[in-house]
Amino acid sequence: MTRDLASARSRSPFDESALRELILRWRDDTAGTYRTWFLWPERIKNFRSLRRGIEQVSAEIEANTFGTAFRGSSLETVVHGVAEQRQIFKGADHAFLWKPKLRIPDIYEDRGNQLAFGRMLETCRCCTTEAQLLTAVRSFAERKIKGLGPAAANLLYFLHPTLMPPFNTAIVKGYNGLTGNKVKLGSWDEYLSMRRGVMSINEMFRDLLSNDLGAIAGLLFDIGTGRFAAPPLPGIDTMAARAAWHADLARVREEAKLDKAQMVAERDDVTHTEVQGWLRDLGLSLGFDVWIASNDRSRPYGGGCLADGCLTELPPGLMSGTAAGAIRLIDVLWLESGGNVTAAFEVEHSTSIYSGIVRMLDLALSGERGAVHALYLVAPDAREEEVRAQLRRPAFSRIADLHVRYLPYGELDRHREAIARFGRGLHPIEQLARDLS
Image 1 (cartoon, rainbow, N blue to C red):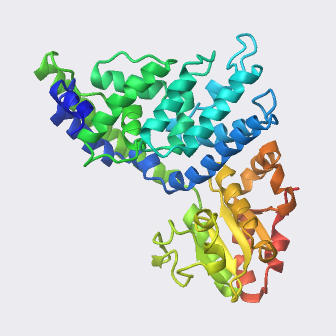
Image 2: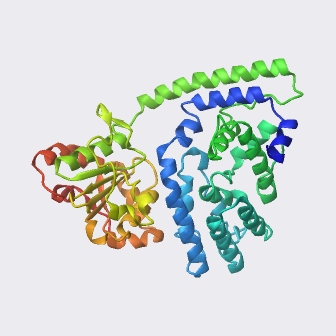
């Protein structure tokens, strides 16, 4: 047992049995962050793309090509990707937005601060131990860069999810409510102090949480936003406080039933998995071998699994490079019998296209250039303008030569049966897809 954990147990500021009860209730809440974000399959798929984006930010800063503005920068693209990681990271971009009257955050006009920020990100990206990571963070904190406090820890979480918890107003509020502490926003010292407490609590309840600190951060977020009330702190009128707390838990359970009913009632006409299923069936009908993203293979579809009838392994040529992990996560691949990739499809049902674009870049630049004939972003009809706007970002300039095309759900749904019966090769899909250049 570590010193921090032993200390936490000896002076636990909360009722451990009550917190265990709360965590169990929270895990079962269909509208809480555990089920809507932490167990969300796209969450894990986005880690590599965000890590790569952070690497690009550091490289541009070091090469002095980053510029002097947040808008249009590679940092904006990365932070936008973080902010779209569902409700827990909503508003993550606020800390990085340029506030001209206050001249903060001071990493756009001060070259020294900008270099320090980029080098901190790169050092943390390359760290292999907790001690190295904390040394880099403390060294950066000593610069006291105006306007850039521990909100940057949200980037570090995607580099080291087992060592750096996310940090925002709701998480801090939840932590203070749970422990009785008074951690403040804006201070790296306060963040590092909270981090120690979070990791001790996480270790104490590891059987219900995770090595990934996103789980406990989600719990604190749901407490901080008021979805769940923290257990009564010691010293409070226990019987009355417990009764009120249990009443609040009952309220959340009833609200969760209503939330679930509403989600079913408001369900989209199609889902991400259904569109993958369309593409799977269509690819098989046209005579291609089909690959389904490795983390989606076991999803239920059509009375079986989504990966039924598909490849169980990718060709050796695709699996031998450094980008193999990202390629395995592309939603759907159509391959010729010889193993060349004919078409790649990323289904962007409601999330940012950032991760999908990065995976396509990995495939296109993996050494199989001549084999990748077509790259498609498959998205709801209403997202066409959003997709076009995203691709105009400077950070995506490298994909201009890849000729990524937009394939709307509506066109695919209306014509997929006819294509399966009468189509041949990629020509029918090319006719449906729209140029994004």
